[in-house]
Amino acid sequence: MKFDNSFFHSSFFRMTFLLIYGVLVLFSITTKTHNLHHQVHTNNLSFGNNTISKNLLVHQFYSQFTHSPLLLLQKKISFSQSIVTHGTRLKKEVALTFDADMTPWMKEQKDLGYVTSYYDSRVITELEKTNTSATFFLTGMWIQMYPTETKAFGKNKLFELANHSYSHPSFAGSCFGLSVETSNQLPDEINKTQELLKNVGNTSNSYFRFPGGCYDNASLAVVQKEHLTVVHWDTVGNDGFNPDTSSIVSNVLSQTTNGSIIALHLGGESNTPHTADALPAIIENLKQRGFIFVTVSQLLSDKQITIAPTPLLTTFFTNQGDPKTHLLSVNQQTEKE
Ligand SMILES: [Zn+2]
Image 1: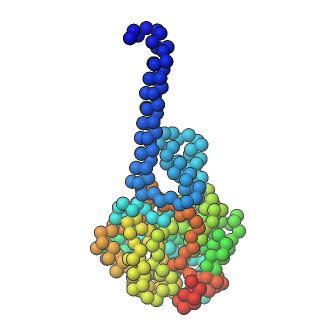
Image 2: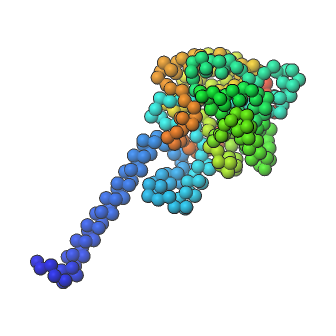
């Protein structure tokens, strides 16, 4: 066959060219799809069945090729409606977290002398003694009540500080009897504590945890606007008002797995009297099982996240009913749960 001009215009050449081009395009798509599956698998990402999660999946796919403004917007939307509940399931790392709640009513109880303290220093003693990392989700009112302690936490390399609102209200309507604030008060609830974390705890924080664990799309949007990531949990000690140390221990040990975020409390005395008692067995057992304790930011450093498809309700802090019934007996709680 002669390769003159007539050859390049022949239908044989055109068909061959189209065939080779088609094979190359198919190969390219297959490779990129495989990369996506690999990425999802190795990052241990879990997706809910809502469109938000699909947006994230779409973003994961396209971000391999480009960072166009449209796709960045897509990422922003997906993250605005997501919360972190654990880290990677591929590493034996876990994060102990302790919430320090404080409401105006709780403060009043202390001012009136009904409660001596909302800080159980035995938790810190145990963490330091065992060289165990932890993250504290502090309310602004708690920081104002315990500035010296907050400052010390901020200086301690083992610890990380995060935001748990200013006065522990509900961010999503009815939530275990927590006081409900109007939506335009919610940014202040976040920002006042951000300021306190910075000024008292010397911390530039990136994480937020909803009081009572209650949220909806509107409150998620508020947190997103303040550029914070919502960090909840996959393991609860159910230490609120719990008189049984061994049940707190077994709650934690039975749920903890690779990447777990464990939710406990720092208040002690009336609200969470036996958290500190449970801590030595929890730490010892999990270390024996090969788990390494890290802070939340260390746990999430490789961006492994989980999407919770629907709003969650907490079961670990159960001051349901009237906001003033913060000190419900365990029997009352059980009935209400
Ligand atoms: Zn709380």
